[in-house]
Length: 189
Image (tube, rainbow, N blue to C red; front, side, top):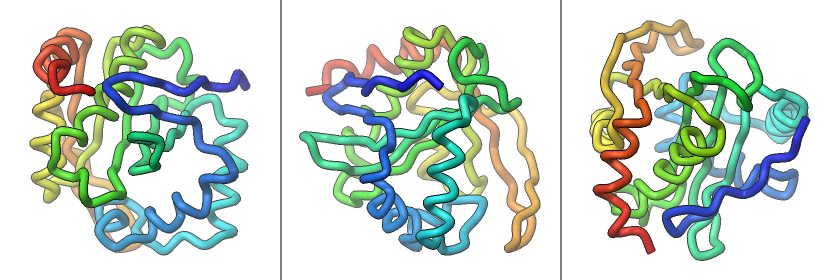
């Protein structure tokens, strides 16, 4: 698999996840406020985390990044190809994102990593459609994605260990990204 280079845009850097990031990612992912927004809300063990890392290292259908602001890790984001095809060369990708550092949630900074990832998808990878799946009860994430130019499409119900969860699928195209990016660009440092 071809290594992914760091993505630098909008004053943030998205660095590919390395083995050295695993303890921090697991700590973040196990925080109740973050895991509550995941389909799988179980606590992640060291073994689970290592198994996940081993799998993503050889899986071309996904890319995972640590979000860094002023050289400090503040969150994580990822891309997946919904049909299991390689991310590179795919026209449709799905993005995921969370800020672990609560100081940045709800701030202008929250938009910059998402804009950097979206720019990478549209301008570097040549993606034409980005998807996001948001829990229907996560009104902050729904508004966040709308401000990034995403449009709501369909609702889907997923079975989880905790019971059924309804997700709102949202879709972004290059035109929507361009409008959103122009609104936020002046605030990027």
